[in-house]
Image (cartoon, rainbow, N blue to C red):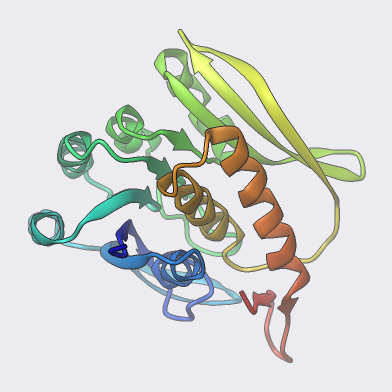
Length: 244
């Protein structure tokens, strides 16, 4: 059987711990080839993001067109959105014609350092295309007003509750979210790079393989458990890296 491609439209982390490099590594673990379109370049390491530089919008859209013209795309992951409302609208229009699963991980800020997105309004067009959106708890709170007219699935990650954190799969219809599934984890102080990227990429891989949303949710949660277990930190690093 011909191996299909998964496409990531996201930011570039030069250390490889997160962003597009992490997406590509995750796709490969699930047996997919990878395509990538960079929304933003960064200067960063484990101590934080120092500088961000968004890709020229017209160049980005031409890059996306070239990929879609040739590659057999089985699914799309969106990470850091572009800083242009117009560009995000055009990305959404191009993806709407693909009829493949789309997972949107709205990376608004890194764990440490300079924010990626100051005005959350710019990402609103991208809410029209995803099969699943995967904000962490703080991102969900910043975006909550947009869910009033969102229809689809959302995974809210890392909800703090006493000594645990919860990941919740919700289905939104008419602005109301219904709890479909929940997974809990012990709370710890270990900061592991790229967990959000790896989760959303694993989720997409399951969907692209034809798994239902509930099964993809559980599979992605288990992938991240293993991802965290296989993480390490070298001297001088502020965060942990995963071997996966």
